[in-house]
Amino acid sequence: MNFLTSDLNQTENITTIIRPPYFYISGFTGIPHMEYYYVFLCFVYIISLMGNTFVMIIIYVDRSLHSPKYIAVFNLALTDVCESTAQVPKLLDMFLFGRQFISYDQCLANLFFVFFFLTMQSFNLIILSYDRLVAICFPLRYHVLVTHRSMFQLTGAAWFGSLFPVLISVGLITRLSFCRSLVINSYFCDHGPLFRLAAPCSNVLPNIIISYLNPCLVFYIPMVFIIGSYICISHALVTITLPQDRHKAIKTCSSHLILVAIFYLPITVTFLLQSLIPTNLRIINLSLTSVLPPMLNPIVYVLKTEDFKESANRLIRRVFQRAVGPVKSTSNH
Image (cartoon, rainbow, N blue to C red):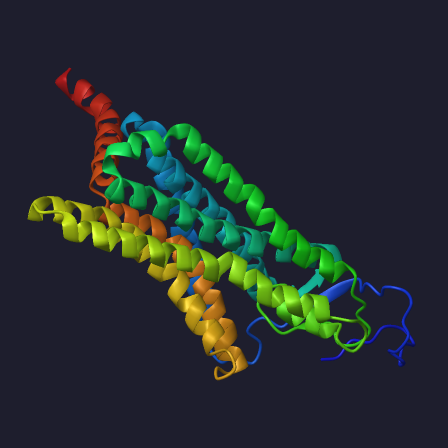
């Protein structure tokens, strides 16, 4: 499908910015049996909302979890809810109602929120990595280096730091003219497919540069930091003499390592092999790397973190006792 602006056959020497009224998101068009994938996405979204909301409620209600570490965990759960909401509802709207057209302003908003919360998730994993690094390598200074104030400062820095690369990407899109196809070959208003539409009409070199710089800043540098922190943690674990202490330290890191693997490995594989992966397979793979981590993160924390499991069990027992209490009292009469 090719959309043309009115009477614009020449694309050279354009002096005004051409902003179309809408774009067309191709989504998963042409891929057979995609109705099952949309049902799967709906299931994933519901589990993500329920799981992350449950994590936030447990942390908020249980005072024993009002520690600096769980500020970062609460922020990660909040980010997961926002990230899922930025993507999945629009995908379901496209499937259920066939609304694949999106206005220019809505497209930029979609681009902003998807990349903003993806960046936030990456920075949240850095904060959790810092917490584990200090806890194991500098245990005597943990309560000095990791405080409520320092965690709030790190979390605030992550929110503000996530704004700049995304705002630059969106700002560079606004300077482009779109005079030919308006079909975005992705499942959302993706930065790469979007600026390539303007290549025949505008200078997209700044967009190309930022498309290489942002992944380094948002994904690869944080990943290098996390790998470096776990090299230091591994060295510290070797020096621990008691096996039970070493096992406890490893167990405290396991949940975070699983979160890191869930988030970074699929993204890394996709970027490294993107030239070898067919377009439709790449789109599906990218969508999975975006929607699966928000669903799996709360499951990992519920299953792998002992103090969180104990808090969840206490809350569930308390709610259950309140629910069955009036029934018992009436039965006694």
